[in-house]
Structure formats: C-alpha cells, structure tokens
Amino acid sequence: MGSAIYLFAAFSLTWIIIFIYILSMLKRQKTLEIRIDRLSELIDDGRKRKTS
Image 1 (spheres, rainbow, N blue to C red):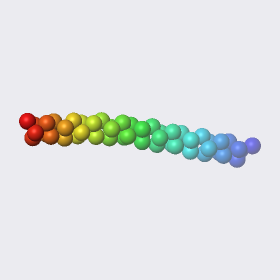
Image 2 (cartoon, rainbow, N blue to C red):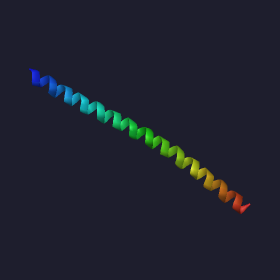
Image 3 (tube, one colour):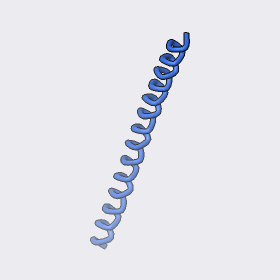
Image 4 (cartoon, rainbow, N blue to C red):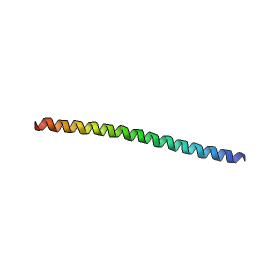
C-alpha cells in the first residue's frame, strides 16, 4: 500500500507540472500575439507615412 501512495504522488505531481507548463506557454503565446499586433501596427503606420 505504501508504494501506491508514492506512485499516486508522482503521477499527480507530473500532471501538475504539465498543467503549469501549458499555462506558461499560453501566457507566452498571448504576449507574443500582442507584440506581433503592435509591430504590425507600427509597420502599417510607417507605410502610410511613407506613401503620404
């Protein structure tokens, strides 16, 4: 019975780490999307100024 507790603890810890990693990746992706949008706006503004 004792080894089953360690197995459950390891299994639970593994899933918690995976969940935290996924949340971290989602946050990084959102940050990158925001930065890409800002850069796109800057590029568009630069093109508008150049043609005007």
